[in-house]
Every structure is written in C-alpha cells, then in structure tokens.
Image (cartoon, rainbow, N blue to C red):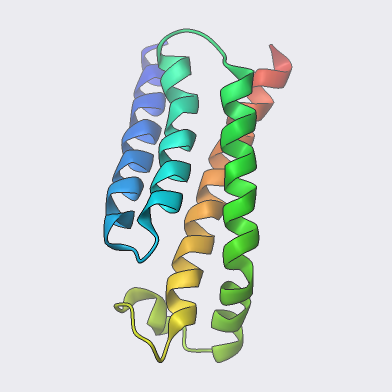
Length: 122
C-alpha cells in the first residue's frame, strides 16, 4: 500500500513537472491542460477512489495531443537529426518541438493505460 502511494505520488509529480516545462511553449495552455488532466488520474488513486470519467477525459486529451504532434514527430524521424530533440526551439527545426510533445504524450498514454488496466480489473 505504501509503495503504491509512492508510485502514484511520483507519477503525479512527474506530470506536474512536465506541465511546468510546457509554460515556455508557444501554445502552453493546451499542453499544460493535458499534463494536469493526466496527473488527476493518480491523484484520484491517492485519494482512494477510481474516477473513470477523469481517466477517459485525460486519455482522450492525450490521444488528441498524440494526433496533433504526430506529423511533426514523423518529420523528426525523417530528418534523422536525432540530436535536435535535446536542443532549443528554432524555426529551422520545428519538428524537434513536435517530437518532444509527441514523446510526452506517449509517456502520458502509457501511464494512463496502466491506470486503465487497473480500472478494468476492479
């Protein structure tokens, strides 16, 4: 039980940190909202209940984020400039930002899938 609470807390803090990092993004409201929504799922578990509606909203938002950032991620893979993902935002490499957004959403989707499996077995 203590380990589960620790894991939920780490997941919450990770997604809040990811939301904070998005504050310097050109469109921060969208991405911050998604990361905060994702963090609500483990928060509900910390509070001792399963809010399936919050899960579905967060998962839906995450899927939208994946869909929006997928073309840029494909451009990133096609560029073969894999070091660009660690660099700053620049007009000559817009795919780097999309790649970071896509990978962040992928991390969110994977975490949410684990919570979803937990919801289904209960």
